[in-house]
Amino acid sequence: MYMSVAPEPDLLIRTSGENRLSNFLLWQTTNCPLYSPTAFWPELGLWHLVWAVFNFQRSYHYFEKKKKQL
Image 1 (cartoon, rainbow, N blue to C red):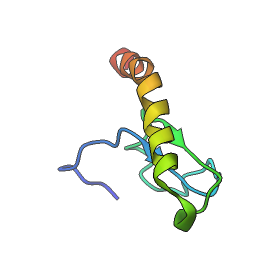
Image 2 (cartoon, helix red, strand yellow):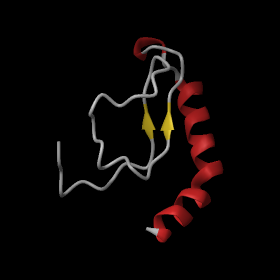
Image 3 (spheres, rainbow, N blue to C red):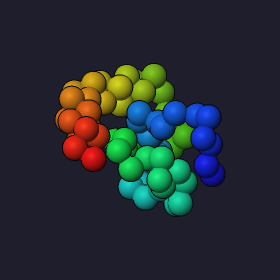
């Protein structure tokens, strides 16, 4: 799935605790963090989203530095 008009994602949330992407947006997510809570999709709540954004904000400078090195 290649979308040239859409920007690359900043954060990828994969539910059920899986760390694999199953060939979903492999090239677009090379420089974005993967957050994988153990909750399944129907159980994913507001606090899971808040925690994912908080972790993203903590590591934002690291990923920006990594992107500039490429």
